[in-house]
Length: 182
Image (cartoon, rainbow, N blue to C red; front, side):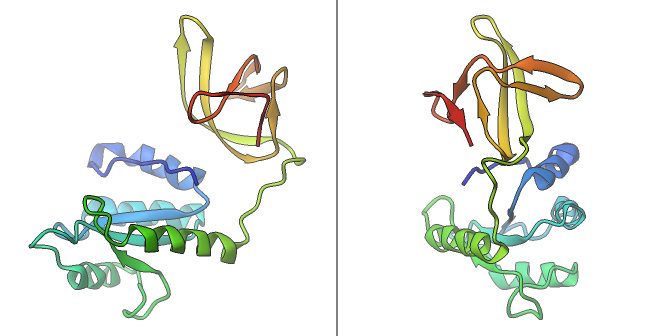
């Protein structure tokens, strides 16, 4: 599972849109104390336009002012019909601080993956999304990718935004060298 955390602040609309288009599943995080905000509704629209399945994590349930039912009602009022409010979208109370509900959230992510039959073909045509790129003094151009289909190995040529480049080195998410990325 690769998580891409997009900021909730209003100024990051383009980043949230890109995140929805890259994701196989979206976890929409709504604070149990703040409730549904304009950027929450905007994020839902990005997810719907991308056609991506999603579930809701209602975070900060450890706070005294947390109100999970209010958040579910606000979601319902804005067209996000969660279980128990006329819909099938899973909404789970969690606390990122205490870990409450996180195991159930991970289980639901895996269940959604199975139900949606999300699989890539390592032998298929290579398709990936650039998450970020930078120039490194020692390595040259460095690109962080999320591979959606196919595989990548040293020596392959890739193209992004009209720029053609040869893959000189592969590293996994921990910085360990790899011969093949799937």
